[in-house]
View 1 (cartoon, rainbow, N blue to C red):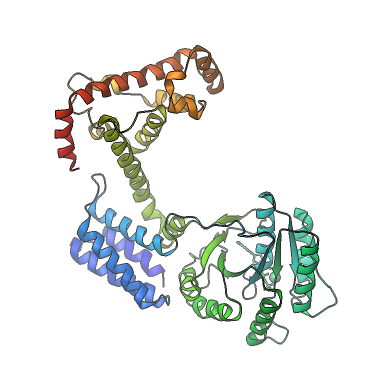
View 2 (view 1 turned 90 degrees about the vertical axis):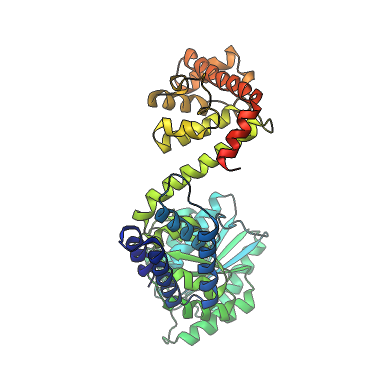
Length: 446
Ligand SMILES: Nc1nc2c(ncn2[C@@H]2O[C@H](COP(=O)(O)OP(=O)(O)OP(=O)(O)O)[C@@H](O)[C@H]2O)c(=O)[nH]1
Ligand SMILES: [Mg+2]
């Protein structure tokens, strides 16, 4: 299903069809793939309409091919479906906080319970685990092993088959001991192999224990089935968030789209291996890049990032020239990093307002070699924020400290500061040439 999207991206980038035809074809393929992953038709249409609208309204940035830019637009809008640029809020909203993990057998609930305990423990929470899987042989033993490994207490009743009672008693015990985060690991299968019984049990635990958050654990390889499954669990226990496990395998986690669609819950974490620390806060953009095919996207994303940094530098420079804002070493730091990503310096120079119209500044003067850039980056890494924001405070004594911290010579630190002063002087000249600047802004289309 979502493999279709990846193939379509490839075809779109390398195919012979004219741009307009290729766009039409791609959008159809995208719709088909999303609808076949059970994403609501309404959602799919609104997504593709947004993409089309942006294609009409916006123009590609100068360093991207039109086709590359189109994929970037798709990437943006798909990412928005998963939360956009925002990483999910993972800190508990209140204290104490009770999490109940649900999901079918073998998806990685028990492993994830341990990973979560470890994650929050490192963030300073007092964490405990409750083992409520009474069906899987040695389930409690598995959880206890994990608890021991990370030094987190585990509540369980080895001889009991009362999952609801265990959950209640475990949570009550840990609450009375002032634990801040309690994680309940539930069963993935029921003794009689009946799914409805399992769901009934989830519902009962949910109603009796009233956890603050129900987390649905799904496996990356779960495709279309994810929708029905997520829906069932959601009806039983009001799923609040989702964790996708086994993202380290070949599966791309396309089912996540369906699970999100079925529950309206946000994906919070992804599991990337069997080990306790192989858990990552979900990042929508990284995830969508995987769905679209990382190989093709990587280059575009790199360029895109450079373009964005670039645009922000350009805007900053405009503000500096117009007097709205002050240039700091921090800006220069960003510039140098962006320049290194972008490649040919002469191209960069054309983009920095001023340098292309300043007859009296030679490119050589602004040109910085690769070696020097590396050095300057480490010098700036050794500066405090105060120094980066206000370089005029960098006196001899500070220079010595910075040189020492970055393993460079005082002379080199001085050279960087002087380069910065030179740029500032240049900007002053520019400000006086307001007329030229206005003309330049006209050219930039702003
Ligand atoms: N590669 C990989 N393996 C994982 C990940 N998460 C869990 N596993 C493995 O998946 C298998 C099942 O994990 P469990 O945590 O026991 O799954 P469960 O959902 O508790 O299973 P039941 O209790 O039977 O429902 C184990 O071998 C885990 O090591 C992951 O993110 N990546
Ligand atoms: Mg388990």
